[in-house]
Length: 375
Ligand code: SF4
Image (tube, rainbow, N blue to C red):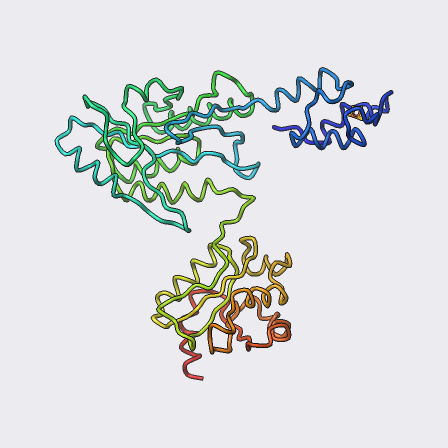
């Protein structure tokens, strides 16, 4: 764990009420200011001539990287600092690799399938991260990053694959725990698990999902299966998001089913999960519509409202920026049902539009739009 400013401060003269307290020789106004800067790596410990050796040792240990990072042609593996994502964040997603045996009769077909495979989830597009090819006399020509098996074996990676699931998962947990908690050099290499050809797909999926969560840095499959890789990539995206950065989409006006100036207008914030729930309903409606997405640092509507990231003034400013009043003749905006309490406030601020309270849940949008038609 990195040292906090307060933990550093305890070692400095001011905390001990010793001579030289707050002497400013480090160009900081106080020892506390120095400690806070040092915790953020904005100053060197050498700037304080009175910093004790004990603090220097503790700092050096806290800054020691627990797990190495291995790089293959831009693909980073390992480099993790924590056991649990909520402690800070995970750094490099578990790499998904396919072992391609070029001595098999259908290997070129498999290569094509790997190259053509691609999925898009929450605005991100994923492909297979790496092909490890074997039994080939020449380098593999592919638009997917690749490495020969011989070169792969030379990397500083630890093969955690064992006889069965229990042994492999225990090994993965043990290695990661020792690397992070003890900063034990012996366990600092990133890990991988390899799945041999011909295994039951359901079992493979369950085991690989567990290893992805705890704590394989790379998964290697001898068989390529699109559904398995899609499932793992979707899981991976969830596990490796930064908990400090909510998933968000661009704040702008989105169009569904070729809207014109008389089409209905919905509004929400740029929290990705809300956006995709609403967008998928609007797409399937077969009714032309607009969705105004306001900037709210990726917060959901209620969170944004309580954090003052969705205020009437901000909404009015956003609509002005998007030129909505000039773009359409429609004079009604449908807001999320969770923000019904803002109706009057929004109407006072947004003179050009009437505010209509919509549904609380996205799935109810279809019935809600039908009820609008009948009115
Ligand atoms: Fe405190 Fe050291 Fe800075 Fe002096 S040089 S103010 S003792 S941190």
